[in-house]
Amino acid sequence: MSGGPLWELSAVEQRRLLGAGEVSVVEVVTAHLERIEEVNPSLNAIVTLVPERALAEAARADDAKVRGEAPGPLHGLPIAIKDLVDTAGIRTTYGSPIYRDHVPAEDAPLVRRLRAAGAIVVGKTNTPEFGAGSQTFNPVFGVTRNPYDLTLTPGGSSGGAAAAVATGMLPLADGSDLGGSLRNPASFCNVVGLRPTPGRVPDAERDDLWDPLSVSGPIARTVADAALLLGALAVPDPAVPLALPEWVAPDLDGDPGDLRIAWSRDLGGLPVDPAVTAALDGVRPALERVAHVEDAEPDLAGADEVFHVLRALGFARGLAAEVRAHPDLVKETVVWNVREGLALDGERIARAQAARTEIFRRMTAFLLEYDALALPASLVPPFPVEVEWIEEIAGVRLDSYLDWMRACTRISVTAHPAISVPVAFTPAGLPVGLQLVGRYGDEAGLLRLAAAVEAAAGASTRRPAL
Image (cartoon, rainbow, N blue to C red):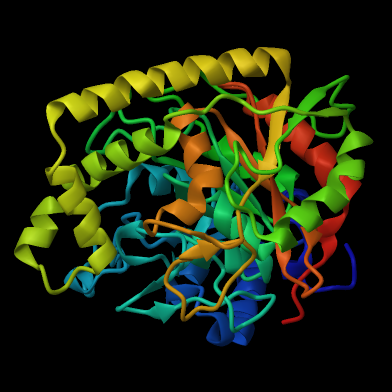
């Protein structure tokens, strides 16, 4: 064990120390609670904290280990749950004033899975209202700030989780991703964010079990830590039709093999901030030490229309009742998305569903030629917290609050797993993530590649000065 504080260690190393009995769960949880007290007031990443409850759970976990009970894969690791996910007895607001005082009676399936794996829930991480948008702010808790520059956003919608992990307040965090909400904040905060294949992390309580757009996944400081958390979350569930079979965590220390990687600077002509392009161009030689890299683009024609239609359909399904009941308490972008969904006709929805099928087939065929696709995780670097969404990139005006996220939304439509890996910084010292897209259902191969890229780039070791 090094002479540094426990919170500086990776989740894998903390778990090793706990398993060996070199530290107690109470010691680990206390170290993170002290770190939260130190830096969270500057960031507003963890918005609800339950320290007494967490320490009591930690003591019970220590007692269970003494009794010889088999520890779970996350035994003793503190975690805070995204404030979109129900936690029994802990306030869950969804970032909405409608639910400012909402305390669920039961844990969501994801939380039950984390507790069963031995994680200790210490609180909730901030999110935009109903998770809408890749900038983390809401009228209940306010803005979350970027740990590399407190005047900037950490991204979103899992921005609180990413900022908390980046600063060592948590070793791991859960997040969710419909259009980039794991990958975007990971890029902005220099951490790892993995969007798994739909069904890898099943949720039997979703309002549409057939919808592959929104998924849950891990945020971590390293690829190995992300694999550790995914292993605890990826539990098959026969009640979920899209659920995948049991997942086995890969060996990340070996050679990823003779890989062929497609390199895309702009995913089919999207506008990209020059600082992002320059940063990723600078890291391409590191990727070329890991794999054979060549310029190539998948055909994602129609993906923007598919995403807009199916996202709007989901908002109409999930939030129309809230907008009707509380029109003055819901932010305008959510109201707009619900209205867009309610205005859809059957023919447009049918076309979008058919187009999604063709896009999946084209992406699957593309990834038979290449082992992975590499592209920007975000089209822009972190921007001021006062800016709700980016309206222009590289001189190109954008039509809606969704368009600046298209490096991620187009990939979401394909239903393929994707990961944002810390690889570079702009001259202003802002993180830039590389998005890697793998074959359907092959998180193991994607994580092996990501670990090799992480090691070659070396950017993940640069932590914020907080």
